[in-house]
Image (cartoon, rainbow, N blue to C red):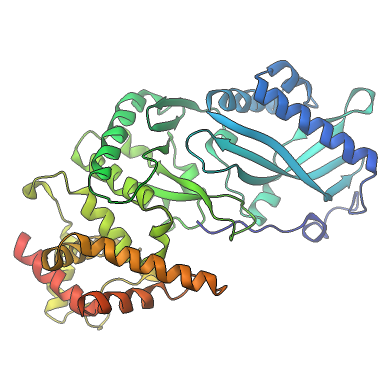
Amino acid sequence: MGALSGCSLLADDETSSPGTSAAPAPPGVVEELKRVLRRRAVAVREGDEQVFRSGLARRGGELVAAQADYFRALQDLPVRVFRYSFDPADVLRDGESYWVVVRVHLQLEGYDAAPVVARDRYLFAPGARGRLRLASVTDEAWEERNGVVAQPWDRGPVEVREVAGVLGVFDAASVGSADALLELVQRGIADVSAVVPYAWERRVVVYALGDSGFLGSLAELPGGDPELVDAVAFPVPLDDADPTAGTAGVRVALHPRMLTREDGARDRLVRHELTHVALGPRDDAVPVWLSEGIAEWVSVAPLAPEDRALSTASLVAARDGLEGEEPSGEPLDLPRSDGFNGATSGANYGLSWWACEALTTAYGDEVLWTLVDDLDAAAEVVTARGEDPAVGVDERGEEVLAQRTGLTTEDLARRAARLMLATYGP
């Protein structure tokens, strides 16, 4: 996912209402804000809901109810680190109250490599004896401007379930599917680990919610429409305002329609997404045709050949491409990373999968991992030069493919198309 922007409040709120002031907050206010946030964090870590509630500006209403749900979710999650921080420069006075950009540091034990820093904008208002209390954790306009991606427990009540290696986040509408889904993901981890040669944690966080709201909030959702996506593996940035900070891990989110689907397609989908998790940062170093092709190739590995379904769109595209009837008028080629999704998404997944099949047929399974390793090393060189490794990934892919196999991407696309048609028929 793209890194979230980190605009300063002092610049971001220059157009605030006349009642606000960007002047530095008095030292006493900064210390009071630190006290309130420290007390709130300790209450979460120690499971003291009474102290947690006492830090709220109101005793009833939507805020208290929503915060009660949030507190319970944090108690159910395997929290290793939970604390707050803020920059005093990001305190904005609004009458007797104060808006603050708050950094939430949260690490899930066993799943996050380090604490994840996420920003949001809180409002603190004076309560009894003038002490500040939390009056709001929501500023929708600020969140939209700054690309905030709220986690499921930030959005509403959740149901947390955990088995060995899998942390599932559900809600009231989806928790009935929890047991079957967690068992399925456990099987998927074993299946993927049997094929992917890299060491990985073999643990994953899965969001399986009753609506597609979280999916729709992801900035780089493939295709841009959550209703067109069955599942997605997405990296969790260590710092949502610093794209160079790296990631804490990769999580998986499922569309609600997949929760009750009880056939091989769901198992295959889970294996596909878990392959992205297993590849981790290596996934970002390779062209999308190789990344998605490997994920499809791994997802069908446990299946008998007759059960490895392929979309009709893929076969049509393969036939038309070999006959010189590509709709674009261009020669048949592997999909570029910047145009993988959209109307040709189904065909692209199939062609990418069979590009991997063509490679392994000719050179053995190890060729896929050799390509990944070579491209990962090339991306590290680019990064060391201070350049963005996401730029030029297709070109590096073409170069490494030619070095290892002597093939161009057009050559490989035609091989893949011929193999698809030979296997499935015209």
